[in-house]
Length: 116
Image (cartoon, rainbow, N blue to C red):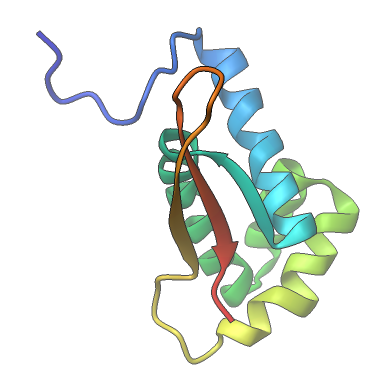
């Protein structure tokens, strides 16, 4: 019985799951809109929201954490371009739009994008 466990496992060990979520997060910050499965989009949403909140604060520790997660170029883009657009917003920086099912394996697809 699964109780008090946060997050989805995606039938992966912890390290590959973390790498998957980080790569999806990098793609979202780079393109600002990506298509993936609904479960991955919903799981990644919390990571994206927390990073944007840190980018809005923008102190040195937050900048270092964002750089560690995204890399230098995407961290700079997040802090200088994306975060200022959410200055007045208290939360809800991302939107998940459900698309329907994929034909090959019937996986539920979704688009996750940054709210403008």
